[in-house]
Image (cartoon, rainbow over all chains, first blue to last red; front, side, top):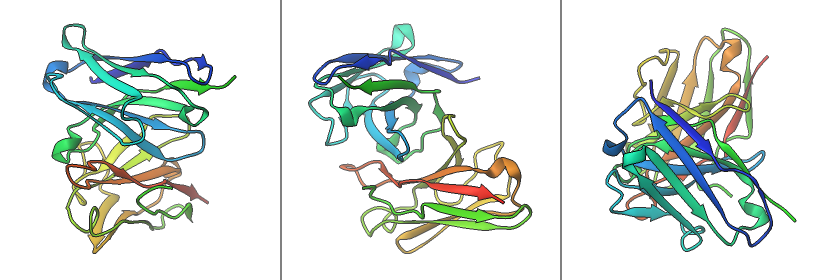
Length: 120
Length: 111
């Protein structure tokens, strides 16, 4: 069974940084492209970033490019999102999701999410 | 503001059918046959119910169906059940520079 478990969400002050993790199990992690998607309270889903299976290339939504960095450690079956310059509007539940969106494939598995709150 | 437009809410009685629309543009929904729909129960992660406009993942009942006309995609749920009450999000491929275009979500209430 595919399992994705996010962690690292926390209360952080504006301008601060945070690193999210996603632990994968139940599939060959190193063969799959991965993504980060977030959902602000009461809002829709918002795609943030994508990373190739090898980790060689990554892609970002325009509004987070330069502030967020996606990475992965295939030996640890883990995906990461390093976030900096956090703003109140970054407050959201952050999900990791499997899917090769660059090839127009859907998100076929999701984690349960981790909450990031940006507030002073 | 989301790039794909969905109604904020729809409702239906048990056993009835409901259709949720998802309107994009000639750069996303109208250009590709890569529309997906996700079901999200309260405080839960989204779950894929339709991909490639009309395809259902294994385990999704055939009460769920998808279609597209021009720049608008549709999700139809027939034989409504109480457990169908959830938020539904549409997504479309928008090209290599905009691979994921999402809607704002639609709340389905089963009366």
